[in-house]
Image (cartoon, one colour):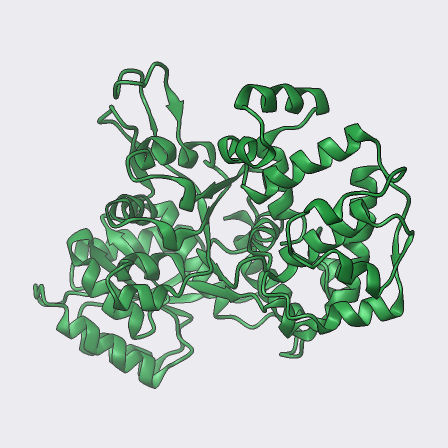
Amino acid sequence: MSESRSEAGRHPPPRILVADDDATVVASLTLLLGRAGYLCRSAESAEGARALVAAEAFDLVLQDMNFSRQTSGDEGLRLLRDLRRDSPDLPVILMTAWGSIDLAVQGMKLGAADFINKPWSNEQLLRSIETALTLGREPDGQTQEVPTREALESRLDLEGLVGRDPAFLKVLALVERVAPTEAPVLIVGESGTGKELVATAIHRNSRRRRGPFVKVNLGGVSSTLFESEMFGHVRGAFTDAKRERTGRFARADGGTIFLDEIGEVDGSSQVKLLRVLQDHTFEVLGSSTPQTADVRVVSATNADLPELVRTGGFREDLLYRINLITIRLPALRDRRSDIPHLAAFVLQAACRRYNVEERALTPAAQNWLRKQPWPGNVRQLVQTLERAVLVLPETTIDVPGLRSIEPGEPLGPTALPRPGSMTLSQVEAAMIREALEHYDGNLTRVAESLGLSRQALYRRLEKHGLSPEAEAEGGRSRLE
């Protein structure tokens, strides 16, 4: 919390209203918040909270959902509605018991900034308050205009995020705003738009940048392996558990966990995921000892989660837990002015990667690329230009060459490298890399696509110094 307290030295301490009818809770929160540098007022009823907000200026309200020993939460919801109506810019954080999560979801729909479980974690509560205050405050001296690329680069690490289109700069500006907070972020966009790169940028520009960044493709985690993969297992937890395994949440402790393809998680696994995201605790499979997970959660999907909620495929409470901030990535067709910049970046990287002479696009080729539909977005553009580097012998790439390789189509008999452009060993390594990227590191499918046994594939991987996981992740993360 040291960074937020340094801000308190430049600004008046934030004023927080604690609205709760339990005197013990009010006393505990007032002491905690006072020690953290906040000024506190309290109200023991909904009426008292309304009166104080009408008479005084507050920066945040910390509100219980149940007053007068009610369990329905109706009075708490009415108070929240009134606060959002009369003070729409005033962030409200709800406090509720685990059994009242449905009530908290109703509150999030009404505009609450976050919800915290009782009994609460002091550290988690303080982080939630700081996040809500940061996101509710306009940055000093900044306007609502889209910042320039140069301005963003002066403040952010934007490695791999290529583009100057206004639609893309808006995304980067939002990254700048949310990265320093602890807010859970949901990144949505079509396949191949760069969700993993944006998640990485959020981590690199956060206070957790020195901590681990753990990526999990949830689409590849089966329900039977979910607990073992995410939370770990002890030796003997199940038949094949011959050694202990550290789960992804434990590996991400102190850093960020990136939950890719979160829309693919099955119902039973969603419940387990919700619990760790809510309480920041989990149990290793085969052990009954709770462990804590100090992680910041960034999720991504190309699915329509609200529609999945409507049809019963995704839990509404989980959706509200992961999407305090939503970042929507534009499709490549919606940022066409970036295509020449992306193409130049990809060509340079591909030539270095495959150790070939530098390539350049003609103006006609750049214009042709800008006119293509790119249903596979940046990923498809990357694959197309890498094919051009591997297949076309000319150092200057023109439209006929691009047309000849069928953008986005797999390499086939008519798209083999010309004699003299690459050695046989280079061709073999390039084909294996492409198959690893295409099949996301699934060695069985890679071997089948190349007509090899798994043993033969292993020998070639060793020969060319290729790592299945690194090549698969490299293909996804370079510019997607």
